Length: 377
Image (cartoon, rainbow, N blue to C red; front, side, top):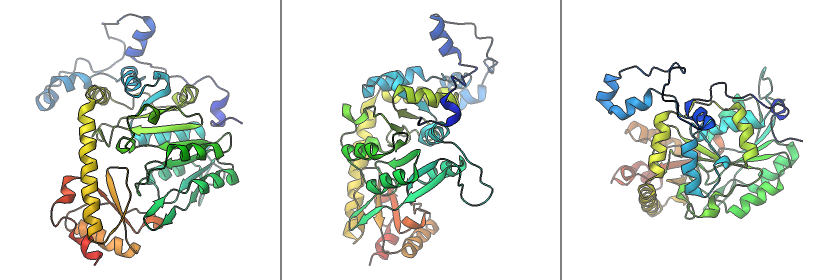
């Protein structure tokens, strides 16, 4: 049985009806300097934009981005030692999640209550909530699996995920690695063992939004193409481009070809593409930033542990603290909000006793997290 949605399995298209100027020039093998067919506002003077942001942004704003993100995928391929056709660029990891579900799953009607007819999707209970938002919005049937929990340990349960996938005949299993909100990092060998335990037509969607904070993030093997797996990455965290919405998937070319059938082709702007290419051309800035974040993360974890907190191991840009009850965590969260400080408390009841704190300089300001310290006394 195919791993893709039934309606996509036997059709060649759909295809982008407007592939865009860069793609057309590549196909023709020559430039098209007279751009009078795409109905863009190329003659808009953009005096206000130029005055506020500069003429280069105004120039980028006038034109559609390259729907195929050819140049950015080329830069990514060089940085990760991957072929261009094993990479797909979209508007952040969130958009890629929705894209994978559109391509892999059959939706079902939801007259009332949980959907019962859409494709089964297996998720850890309390992991990144936007994934569940898209699962339910697509009409899939979501089956949640509890985290594995022990003192100093909170992580997606790989064996339980695999067992649920087999039991339910799942089309997709979702795993965030490193995990959000716990920060736990599974070894690649364990992730591949999970993939091998899944049904043949089930795809592992591997959310690697925090990949850049792994110790081995830039090792060639860390970005390998894994059959049966779609790896999702983002420029929002380590690269600081959350507001521009750029992400990419790593997967076998034949898988990405199906995703292209249902992708929104111009979701990534010209500005976002240019910004991502600029950062890839200057990797030393990103690597220095990641090193600084890790240093702050360890300092924050050390301070919290000194207050008596149970600080979970983290391979991300945040620290997770587990309190003894959801009620206490909620009280700390409310007090900090009243003081003007935003930290994150998961809304899912399975993880309501966690507090997630970003490893920023502001978190280390004396007195900033006194509410957490007082709750631990």
